[in-house]
Length: 565
Image (tube, rainbow, N blue to C red; front, side, top):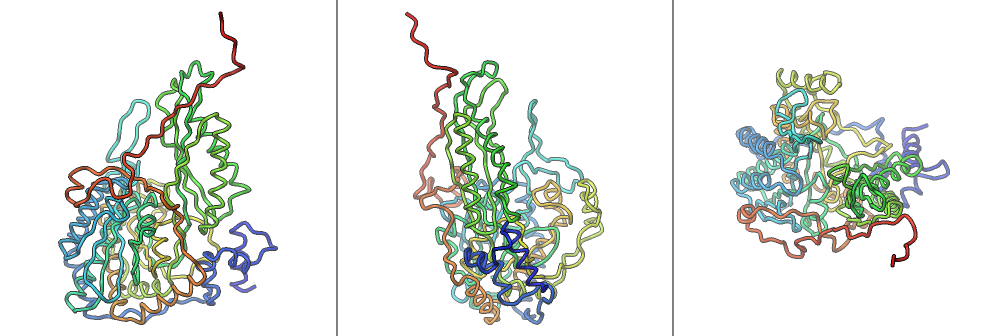
C-alpha cells in the first residue's frame, strides 16, 4: 500500500465515514476539504518523500536593512510585548494594548485608521503605496483566569481575586498574544524601513485585530472587506517549537444559549424554573453526542457564564457558551445544528425559555505551500531562536511543575513537512478567513517550553521573559525576510498566487456570519475614544444592546384550583 493509499484511508476514517465511501466523493461533496487536505494529494505531495527546497531566500541589501532594524530596536520591540503582557486586557477590551501597538507604528511612519468593522480596538496601519500589498497581523488580547507572575516556575497568579465562596484568577497572556502582536508589528516596521531605504515599490499593512481569542475580529473584518486588496498575508503564532507550516485548522462556530426561568427560594423550590437546570441539561445532552455524532475531526466545548450567586436562590437566567469545531464550514454547521437541537430540548425539559445568540464563526485555514517553503528557507538562513542557560533552567522548572519532560527550550528549527494525511481536529484561528482572500504564509516560533499546551499559566509565566523575547524577535526576522523576498522576487509572490488560485478553484468563500449580525462589543472608555478619534456607537450598531430579561411565570404542580369564596 502506498503512502497516498494510506492517506486516503485515514481521510475517510477521520471524518467518520465507512469503507463504502471514497476520497473523491468526500472531496467533491466538500470543496473546502478538497482545497486544504485534497490539494496536496492531487499535486503528488507525499510526506514520505517530501524535502523542503532551498535557494528561495536571497541575501539582499534590503533584507539586511530590515534585519538590522530589528537588531537595533530589540529593546523597543520587547518593551511593547512586555507592556501588553502587563495590561492583560481581555478580548474586545484591549484599550491600552491596541493604543501601544498603534503608537509604535505611527512613530515609524504608518498611517493608522481605527475601528475596523465597527470594532473599537481594531485598526489598519499602512505604510507606502503601490507595488504588492503585504499584510501582517497584530493581536493583543489576554485570556480569563490565566494570570501568572512573570518567570515564576510554579502556579502563582499575579492577580488573585479573593472571594469566601469562589476565588478566581485574573486574566493573563496564556496564549502569548503580547508576543504575537509585537513580533508582527516589528516585522512590518522592518519591511517599511527596507522599502524606504532602498526605494522599493510596495505597500505594507498591519491589521490590529480585536478579540482573536473569541474568533471575532478578523471574521467580522473580512466580511466587511477590510482585508480586500492584499497580495499576501504573513502571520505567526507563539508555540513550543519553531516551524513553518501549511496545515489546515478547524472551522469554528461560537454561540451562547441563555435559559430564562423564574427565580425562587432554594428551600421551597416547587414552581421555580431554573436557568441553570436548562444549561446543565444542554451540557449533559450534548455529551451524549460525542460517541455517535462527532467524528475524530470534530470538537465542541463550553463554559457556563452565569450560573447563579447562591444555592438558596434558584437562578432565573443562565448562559452556556459553546465553541463548535470541525474540519470545514459545512461540517461545522452540521455539528452545530445538533448542539442547537440539544439547547431546544433542554429548554423544553427545564420549562425555560431559550435565547440563542450567534456570536462569530470562521472557516478552516487555507495555508500556502509556496509561502511556507519561502519562510522555511529564510528560517534556515537566519537560524533558530537562541536561548540562554537561564532560559533553559526556567523552562525545565515550568515543565517539572506541570509534569512534563524536563527538556528545556528547543535549540533547533523543526523541519517543514507536509500536512498529515489524517486531520484529527484541533485549534482554530480567525486568520483562516483571511487565508481564503489572499495567499497566506504562517509560522510558529518557540515562546514557551515544549510539552506545554497553550492557554496555560505556564505560557503566561514565560510570555514576558527572555524566552518569549527570543521567540518573537526570531519570528519578526523570519516574517520580515520573507516579505522582502516577496517584494524583490516577483516570481515568489506569483508562486503563492498560482497555488492560491489552484486551491480555491471551485470554492466560493462566504462568511459564516449571517448578514445583520452585530458583533459582541463593549463600550470604550472616553479617553480611548478621544485618543483614537472614534465616536460611539459605531455606525450600524444598536447601543445599548437590548437586555435579556427573564419574564417567565412560576410553574405549577397540578390543575388550577377553584377560587375560595
